[in-house]
Image 1: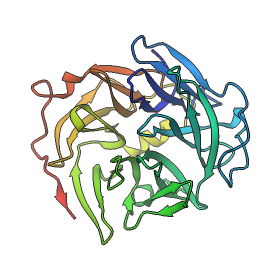
Image 2: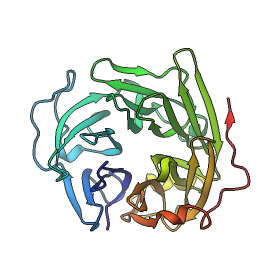
Image 3: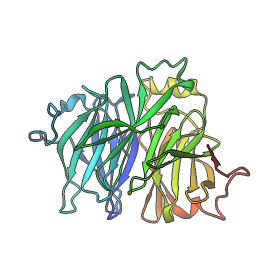
Length: 321
């Protein structure tokens, strides 16, 4: 199967479909959403197909023009009835779609949440109560100081709008993953090669950190309640050059890690044969890996990321901050 610039993956809870976005970059000039049949690998366009109706969310002016849609991170609600998509085109916003209840994977645009001013979004994850957690970078972004850039996590709900998650500052925050009960949050600190766990308590935010040998991009749930992190292991200059180029694909080394959330330690870390990988997601008895620039989706047997086929690096224990 091939989907151009499939930066993120969102498998449906019933295992039938995997949603992804075809991001703008290289030869792709206009973004779109696709659904992949998890059994056959058949890819079909899910959005834009036709204009939606009036927005259901107050403060949303209407649908983004189809030619200007630029999807980035995306995530399903735990029930699988709503798809949340980070959009950079025409406006910086979180676009929300209803997923058809008939099992066809059809999408209908529902509304949007314009992002807080002064920030660009990256990744999104959704709790069971409908609260969306989004990693944000302050603008403008200066590549010369990017490695030291401090971003934050914001939360959005229909009832309260946007709010900053207290004590969520992270250097170059990228992927985000929330436990369905909304009490624990995981954030990929990209340039620092770390995944940070936030235990969100009313009185304080406790952090644990696990180190990786590569720069983690997106985070997804893996087999048996584990966390999956995919990302790049290359100089930032090479990654920035690729992202800003017209190339259809770039040679950017990548890797995948499996993290045990209980011990908060890696149980597997390995390079993968896919350039500029950004997301690894559990799909049935496989792990699918997608890439920021290129057209491939790599399908690995889940056992390839478990002992004895894959082992943890010598360091692997999380530290508390």
